[in-house]
Amino acid sequence: MATITFKGNPIQTAGELPLVGSKAPDFVLVKNDLSTATLSDFKGSKVILNIFPSIDTGICAMSVKKFNEKAASLEHTQVLCISRDLPFAQSRFCGSEGIKDVINLSDYATSAFCKDYGLLMLDGPLHHLAARAVVIVDEEGTVIYTELVPEIVQEPNYEAALASL
Image 1 (cartoon, one colour):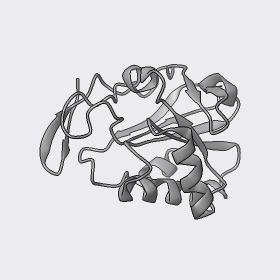
Image 2 (cartoon, rainbow, N blue to C red):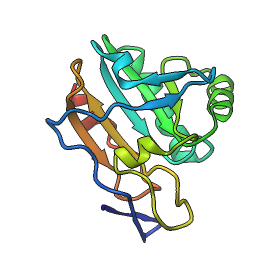
Image 3 (cartoon, one colour):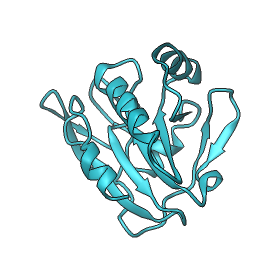
């Protein structure tokens, strides 16, 4: 279990992020067209997992926009934006913002991803949503970078994440 904060108040998560050097847990998440995607679908590419509570909050929206900007110039790299939002909300947001270089995936159906990655918030006003984190996986599925953002209302460290690539 990890502890983060929401506006200074402690929040517990359901576990810990995967360790750098470990195999990233595979997942089944829902794409905007309601089909599914797995981590193994992206084997052969580096994968940035941009994980956040909800696309409808300012910091979460900013992380999607910033990773979208950065994704356009990255070779052999996919950016997966993951939340428990319905795929329709993710699609609406990206459509209205002109965001095309990220792939939105939803854990709304089972929360298995949030649990397997240790990110399901167990208490506080956003309980049952994902904590904010970045996990980067190499072409073979090995975790090469993790950041559990300590305060929900802070952005991730984009520079450190991208430097790990």
